[in-house]
Image (cartoon, rainbow over the protein chains, first blue to last red):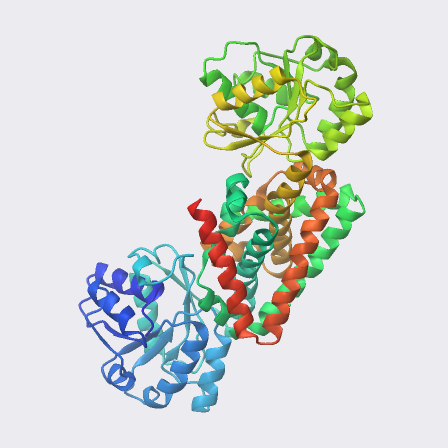
Length: 281
Length: 281
């Protein structure tokens, strides 16, 4: 459900493993579904949610975060039955879907297994899909004790077959961690590009900017709708991460303003050591 | 003078062009100079500044910004004579050297041509030098009307022979532009890494972080001494760039806090369009 970069890449990667099941696409945009069909990503598509649910053993929700919320609210009343399909997602926020599930079903649906492949690209759309997007990457499953063990096992096996390593984490841990390591950097990159394009001619910026700047701002080319949804869906954690960032940035600013050479060297050295130790892992 | 990544790469690139002149290294660290000699980057070295000056037609100042200030203050009284050597530098800040030159000589020395190759790496030291570091890159010369034309021509030819494109810019323009496109991103990357390593175990961060995060924080691996010096040498412009950044970041924070979906989509879309247009240039 939602035939973008991630769902398209799952389809390609599944085919590569020899998967022979039927891949049924669902979405609101006939055009996108037709593209996915013509690219051979799916076997058929439907715009009818009921048809999609009736014919699925596994539903993969791969729309932007707020759209996924809406779809989940629609499908859970039908899917949350003993012989209903396993439902999973691939989104960068988990708390909003957990909340929707609890609101819709009262308790957490056993066959809803929330997941998040840490893989992506600043490119979007199923035209950018690749069959090796998940190879060597991690997939976080935010399972709950009430989850159906077979459903969790099936999803774990699926991701492993696509080359990913599966790890488990709580919904809270996930959203806190992603707010800092992914959501915050995207917001900083978007903001930096906007600040620069207000101050300078767009074409001069990259002409005279170094390679570090290109790397740094690459993620500002990411899909705005997807990131609007993430910003809203993980609002509380993102605000906390932004506040942590700004509070430390103010200290750094103060060190520069006060010509505090020792403090600056300490701050930069600590960061370099941490970055270097990350790189070794 | 200062045998790090940039000077080492200039030496390698010069050799590649068939340059047969004598490359004389000067610095304060005998160990680094001996490394440069054993790597074949230089023909000889000295720890004696007077010897270096007496034997140079062209002096390339390639130390961190504040060290370059000090050396420049020492050499200008001797070099600023009609048959003295051409003096240039490769630093990321120009205003501090301009100020030192005016303070030391009263007027700007004709044969001092300040320059800045927009090339580098998060790796440092002459062991990381490469012969193609400047190929296809831009070199900014911040020439003044009082500059000796032959000196400017010689430097322009030198950089072109190393594969770079030479452009001219005023000192003020340069320092303003670099504060935003290079100095600010480095400060943001250092700060982000520090914020994250306070909140999470260092080894988990990169295990679970995506490729965008790796790209985004790569420059936090840069040499802390070099960046301490840049932060202090270009203090005024960096503070302005940081304030612009923080002021817009606060607006973005407000949009998230107020669940302002339209404003967030606008902000992210504007940045994506600018980033995409950069990439095409």
